[in-house]
Length: 203
Image (cartoon, rainbow, N blue to C red; front, side, top):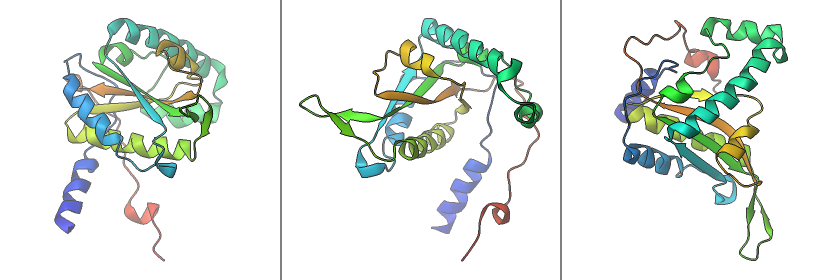
């Protein structure tokens, strides 16, 4: 058990967010398997209130990039306060998001705010944000295990994803996950994660 725990820690210790992606194709079958793994996540009342919109179509990726960059320009040009921009500065981010077109896959992750019963009536869903976030963690780990890089992109607001992906009114976009291989020569910021002592207490 300890060997398996150590091996998984070492795997995840090497995970880094990437912003420079290659356009090298990734087989759909790999994405399917990783999404299926995400679908095994626990959820409130086992309602599995998530939808993963997996996008490789370049036309749709272009639409998403244009819409996301419009929101990002508003964010960087005034909607974000100075404190928020200062917190992002060491990551080197800005309103330009070429990776939304360059990477072979985008996965728009939606939470189902309510379900639909067989008679067409609404079915209340429980703990939707928590459930979707857990499934997203499963997905990121699965993609990393497969040898792929990811970037969690969260432009605000993200309502454009609902329209572009053709999702129903009961679904809310939570995260746009960029998936692929790092570009040759891609670099990442020189940052560290908090230590075990900094993130845990033992009672």
